[in-house]
Every structure is written in C-alpha cells, then in structure tokens.
Length: 99
Image (tube, rainbow, N blue to C red; front, side, top):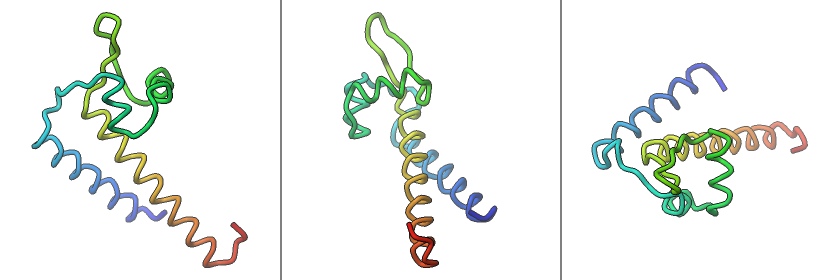
C-alpha cells in the first residue's frame, strides 16, 4: 500500500471513532458475552483475544468487562485489514500472480 492509501485509511478510522463517540460514550462497558455478540464471534474466541491483549479488558469481581470504544477500534482495524487483503487478492489475480 502506498503512503497516501495508509494516511487515507487512518483518517477514515479516526473519523469513524470520533463519530462513534458522539453516539456512544467512551466509558460504555460490555460484558464478554455482549462483546462477543457485538463482534459476531464466540465468547471463548473473544476470551483468547482478550487474554492476548489485542483488546484491553478488566475484571469486575469474577466478570470480565470490555470498553465499547476498544471493541470499535478492534472492529475498524479488522475490517480495514480485510479490505486491504481483498485489494491485494484482486491485484494479484489481475496480474496473474497465481493466488
């Protein structure tokens, strides 16, 4: 990806985060099950992500909690990564790279 493309993606991510904060406060917290449902993944898979530190979390007694803003950041990064991979695939197919 070119430097301009990366800068454009970063500006889109920043804008999306700012738009989200207007609707949902930064301090909004979700349980691990609510977070898994939001990301459309299983709770055990989410727990692996949380354990690895990819998404920050904290414990409230015995229950794990996740800030909604961190879920939004993860989701945006995941989507932009997928879009980048899709673009690479299209380019490689266009250039007959055998993928």
